[in-house]
Length: 223
Image (cartoon, rainbow, N blue to C red; front, side, top):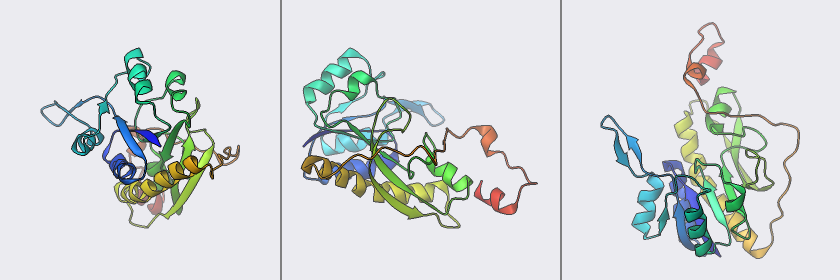
């Protein structure tokens, strides 16, 4: 199948590599525009952009996904599916309709648990013993689309969010490719998420990270 990959941070690079090495034709990559970074606030390309350029894949960096120029460029690439990992922008209806099999997101939780921007951090903070990753079809709601595949991962006692995310990013890459394979063969059926067990994982703000020393030691340790 023809695929256009969308992602931005380092955690998305294993999936980009896995898609590029798969039997599918990677015809383009979408990522966030270059952004200021470091003390000098110099513009830097995203990790996904840097890796895509190493692979020699055309890169699109729209400021807004609903811009007509971007939608025209995506349409011209004629993707069958758009796999997504931590892209960082909402996908508008006009863009969702372009690939015939949709935008397929790899999300680092067992949906419907921890919908949102920081699922790994919230799973650790909550004291979950098991988490995982899910692939699902993106729709208008926040991480509410029907699920195509899942994998589980044990949260270890000493895991930081970085430790856990690194493992999920690597294992999740294989899940994403297997999902695209299943869509191509028609073997996968998307299953609606249950209404029970929903939890939200918004971006971690400064106040969320403040330690309250009167809380149990286990909660302080997780934070």
